[in-house]
Image 1 (cartoon, rainbow over the protein chains, first blue to last red):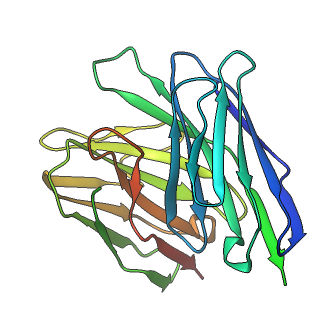
Image 2 (image 1 turned 180 degrees about the horizontal axis):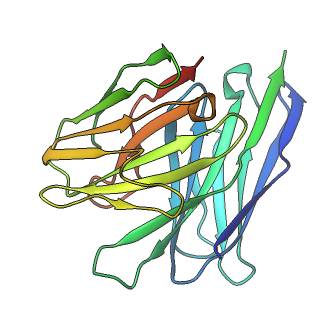
Length: 116
Length: 113
């Protein structure tokens, strides 16, 4: 059974701190790993990672994938109160049923709270 | 990336009734996905909706409880039937517009009383 485990489940930091969120996975036919930010209801896409060791960066956020050790990290530097959200990791795997068929498995998320 | 309009945004429903959630995408997509997120839990895939064919349901979800329509390549509905308080969740539709990450609708927060 596919597994995606995120840690920590929750985290409280002060503005300006740097945080690292973790995502480990066990899936067959791995295709890619996705990071999302969920503030209210709708997850907002952050990064898609397919290759090991290549950092994706967007402003203060960055992420990297290790396909050998089966994990990814999401870093947020100089955190702001607007970074408070649940951060979701999802792993996409290829289904054998047909070309272009994929399945997502989500982790439970890390709830980040940034206090002034 | 695609833009998805999902409605209603939220609803409070009586047990035993049904609610239909709609998603409209601003571009044509082959597959649309419906997810449920129960309080404090992660997203769980309910079903995949292809235009012109029956939806494919995941283990634990059945068509009688969650009928889905997909009349064209830009629109889909999910109905939550004969609701009970256990159905209180956020429901989300999603698409994968080409290469890249999946895009989600704005979500429907359902409370069953």
